Image 1 (cartoon, helix red, strand yellow):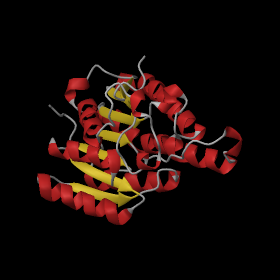
Image 2: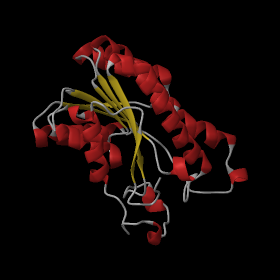
Image 3: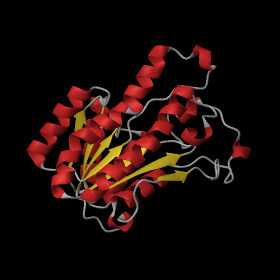
Length: 245
């Protein structure tokens, strides 16, 4: 793949899909910044990528739900090392399915602060530089639960991920005139520490298997590359046939 973009920030990038995305970008020669609430793991993973691929990789502790922390952290990164070309909004939290009346107000607020407001915080921090440069790639991590309403996940998660899809379209319309592509991915059941806690009926999957993190990472890399230059405002399904539309 061809990359005009040379610098990426991946939130929640210390493990799971986030790390797979970071690794795919690093393999393509893109400088990667991993942010995560797990500072030690983020540092370890960044060092691993730098050693493996011979490109600059950094790590920062960052809670995406804390707007001031995001503004200061990303602001310092840009000041010290330059603009961020690619933003992978991957950080998120999820709870298993439960009756609607059992979902507390604290859970609703907590999930939306990370899964939706967290993305907005990060976009607000990088978008001035992207507009100035008139180039950027923003990739938001949604979920098939945003379409289905959730199968084995809480309504709070499903609703937040539907919100991510709408947010992606809104951002694409606003930022398109600045040559900034904004797209979302809608993974189905991917092998992660999060999904290990959930139970699924394999017969619901056309391919009869869970997805691999690397498969999602490949799609992130495509959306960050020049090959996706005319693609914006869309949500791409990667779910093994769990949900077809």
